[in-house]
Image (cartoon, rainbow, N blue to C red; front, side):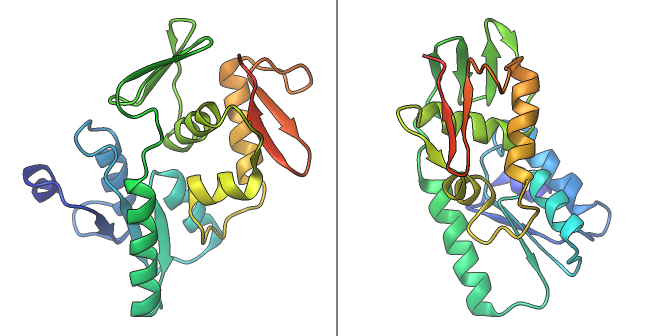
Length: 193
């Protein structure tokens, strides 16, 4: 871990079972520091249950690869994560103000009416994407691909659960939304303007 803070690499690949530190804790540690918060991370491990994968992705990893895998698959997934990391979300350069939200892309902090929101890594990514794409309905598959990765194998309700959690934190009612509107079987849209 110390080497990552000396010279920041383009990407980090962790196993969950690291000597001296759990790989999930290592990911969380990277995500908690400003310099490494946006660093692409892949978890590569023998732990292959659905719960392991969801836990790894929810800890902040950009992708989760279970052994065994081929070198071609690993290479493709690395390229995919690096492509996503190189895309600018339009909110990362500094402060953005949209409706009742102030988004600081450098510190990954969001305030709602001046009150800091305590969002998980994926909740932050999801809310930023919806705000950035607020001119349109964002299809479910596009959100899943952008936030969890093209090869996400987790529970199909993961997106819905994250939206539900966001609504609770935003004090937003699904039946009478102020910020996040559901378009059944299609996707979601930020309507806060």
